[in-house]
Image (cartoon, rainbow, N blue to C red):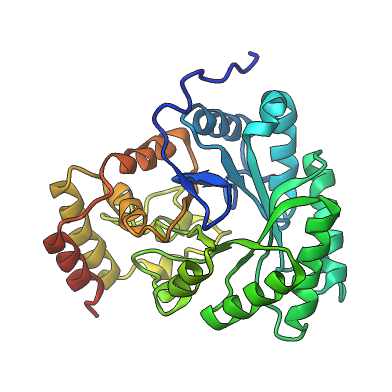
Length: 331
């Protein structure tokens, strides 16, 4: 059946300005890191993308190596973009990245100009588009001068292959240096994508301050800690969950007694707020005005609906925040 987008799709989504740019992103964006690859079901992916767009999620985030296998998420997305969303291309923010291993040999990963430019060309072919809205350097390269990596982003920006550029997984100091180089080149750094959640808080050690000072947006990934900050693991590891799958980053060994105790206590606070644990985890990030958007993942449409429920309550009483801190600091 031909897809007809919800005419009311913008009525209930909140959009935040990204740093000091003119671009606004939805408070919740959808990442295609998992569940959109060659090992996954096309129709399930279609259902998730349609539901997301119908609810005002305009930003879809990919990377060259997303799958598995690597590249297959971009291929699948390109197929659905052509079939369902071609008429809505100007309403979409499509981002991709390069930095991790994509093909063998010395030019298939890290941050050289050769790799970044070649990778984006391949990504555009897989998705069947002429440009992406945001292109990221996916990780800093310890062996390539930062001037070269940022120079590649500048080149891509000036070629019109990306409307904006950003960085991901850069430390606070590396971010400040990267922003300064891009500023000298005349290409602004739009956004930083750090791993940030209640369980992963390194971004609070200077990075958020740098982004605020420089007027750069922030879009945390893994806000639910690969599913830990959901109701899924309160009673063990269910069949089909990320921790039970042979691929992916969340391992069965991560579900310790201490972790279950923490998420159980957090679940109780969420219930008192009238939220699921996932909703509270997203709200906890969005309470900070330096966070532009939260990048969620999903394996089925109902998870997207649940995450969207977080937008109805993104404020916390001081005693709630204090109680959450006590739980998170427990050994």
